[in-house]
Amino acid sequence: MNFQIIDWLSLGLRWAHIVAGIGWIGASFYFMALDFSLRHRSGLPDGVKGESWLVHGGGFYHVQKYMVAPEEMPKDLKWFQWESYATWLTGFALMSVVYYWQADIYLIDPSVLPLSKLQAVGISLAVLVASWVGYDILCKSPLKNNQAAMFAVLFVFIVAAAFGLDKVFSPRAVFLHIGAMIGTIMTGNVFFVIIPNQKIVVAELKAGRTPNPEFGKIAKLRSTHNNYLTLPVLFMMISNHYPMTFGHPMNWVVVALILPIGAVVRHYFNAHDSGKHGRALSWQWPAASVLLLILMVFIAWRPTPAITTDTNEAAEAANVEASVLAQQAFAIVKTRCTVCHSTNPTDFVTVAPGGVEYDTLELVQQYASQIRAQAVLSHAMPPGNLTDMTDRERALLEAWIASKAQ
Image 1 (cartoon, rainbow, N blue to C red):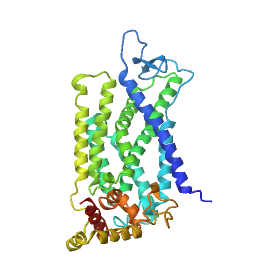
Image 2 (image 1 turned 45 degrees about the horizontal axis):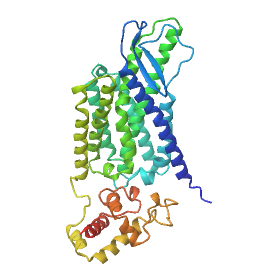
Image 3 (image 1 turned 60 degrees about the vertical axis):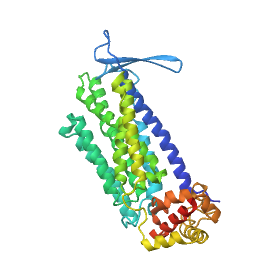
């Protein structure tokens, strides 16, 4: 009996991570929308910034926001924190199972930097810690009073991290780590700043003292950062299914484009929820669409050929008879790919990933476009190049696929 323990752990943790993320992101989006929908009117109690009337689930809700706290604490006070903690904990557990436990497959790429498992995991953990420490220092610096400058520095910080990590980990792991870095920053905001500040306010109020409104302002700043970082972090987390993104030789540029796209889209919803209209809502979608188009064109372009091989060898491969070229391509796939993609995989997995098997030439021909995307246009497969597929072999695969298209 084969329980496929790693697959079950990965599935269970991925499911839990998604569920927790829905809870956290949903709450974040809701409260940002609620904040922007607040309206001030005469007759509101002292300390109330504004109120909002909402309709949902067949009833009406009347919400008021106190900038510091009400004069008397309510008996029941709902805290929103475990959504964030559960998202980070399940995400880190999933990262441990997939990228740490199987570091030689997903985390390490010897052609990028030959690392031991211990070295790779140590660097990964250090990156997560450094991301929070660096961000926290930035938020406590004089730039905290200049939001535009702070976001600019944060943008450079994240893009620089993508550039640096590209020299250390596999391309797939680079994007995963950018997402993990941003997620760590977001959860760190909740754990180290937002919730502690709110608890200080509650304690001051219970002690009969007037809370310092600065605590609320700081928490609000960090919450706003989380709001604008949400869409980029979601892209980074799902990108590992799309080698066209993380497989680009200049993948840091992809990160540099995703960050503003997510922020601009998020800004539209924030502006809409605050009641703005007209020109205030007319530029975000066109701007995001233009940036997305630039991203698509950039991903399709390569600054250098995807395969580095001798010109004569490439020409020789292109001139081989189609039937011979097909057999050569099949031999490459059988040697380099069927350790996983087979009815009876050998070393790394117990079941062919995605049910994709390359046991016959007909099956290889059926999946030719996927092979090109995974092993030619990017080096996502074999993962970590565990089977040592050479550049010449990738060139032969490209020549064969090109001959099929003619």
